Structure formats: structure tokens, C-alpha cells
Length: 216
Image (cartoon, rainbow, N blue to C red; front, side):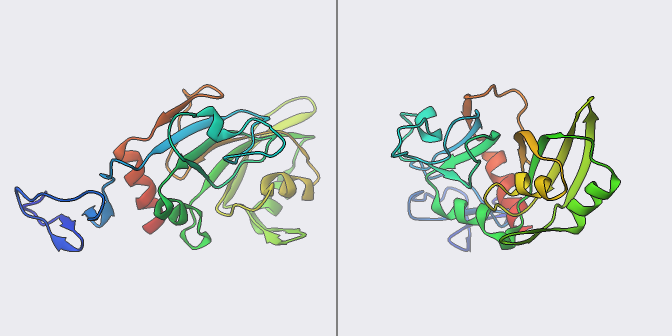
């Protein structure tokens, strides 16, 4: 990879045998960062309901940072409201956080929503075409029925924004309030094996795939 010119250090082609300071120099492979700083941490958590997406809560409620205690000073990338479950990233890499949360990068978030009632084609179409919320119109990249019960349905909703309780408010707008909500994917990142409350470090390839989604 180095011989092929695919690796750069601070914008200059790397050479074989080169030594770097990982805390001061930036390594890219094919234009994407290679996370080599030993002081940076990237975790994936399956957040349970009832846990707050902050590092500290004045009311003493459990927090996502508390669940991964002992991993240094970490911050959640974006938020999940207290009642929602699912995948949440935590890191101390500010540049990574900004890249994933800035609206212009359009990182997708996929949710499964158990909703009241039986959404019809008009409701699903409205989610994609856009619904009016109090803080402006909102639309899903995609929406589809996954399963139907007697008095409820399971809807998959994919969005790129991260407004407060957005999926819940969108489902309210089409007349089908959310009974339970879980985030199942962040961009290309999924993990169906993490139990609620469990977490794990991201692999280098997972970190690079998130960068790739943001800059691609």
C-alpha cells in the first residue's frame, strides 16, 4: 500500500520504514483516516430504555457513559431519547463526532418502530415525502412495513437528520404513535449480537467505514 502511494502522512506520501508520532501526525489510506492515536477510544453501545444519552445527569438517572465506566472521558455521538433503545456510538474523538453529526454529511440512522394501529400506503408515503413538525418539515430516506400485528405494526424508518425525538414525532404526524423504538444501524454499522447494556470497541475497519460513509 505504501509502495502504491495509497498511504499519506500529513498530506505527503509515506515511505517504507517511516516512523510517525500518532498523536501529532495524521495517517490516511486511500484518503480516509487510519485511527492510530492511542488516546482515542471508539465504542458501540446497545442503549437500553431508561438510560440518558449524556455523560452526566443532575437527576441521578443512569447514563450511557456510566454504562461504559472506566473507559475515560467519553461522549455520545448524537442522542437517543431516554425511552428509545439501540445502537449509540461513544468516543473522545471530536473530529469524528463532528463528521458523523453534521447534517451535510447525511449519515443514515435506521430505526425499527413498533407503532399503534395499521399504517397504510398513504402514511408510509407521507413519511418519505415529508411531514410538518413544529421545528420544520421532516422526511425519511425510506420507510417500510416489516411486520403487522392485530393492533400494531413494525415499521423500519431511515433518516439522516438527528432532531429531538424525530421518528416519534414523524409517526405521531401520520397518526401512528410509537410504542417502542430502537435504532438498528448507524450508516453501515450494525450489530444484532449486542444485548441491551452491552458495548464493544469498534474495529479499525468499522471506523473507516463510517468515515467513508461521511465523505463519500
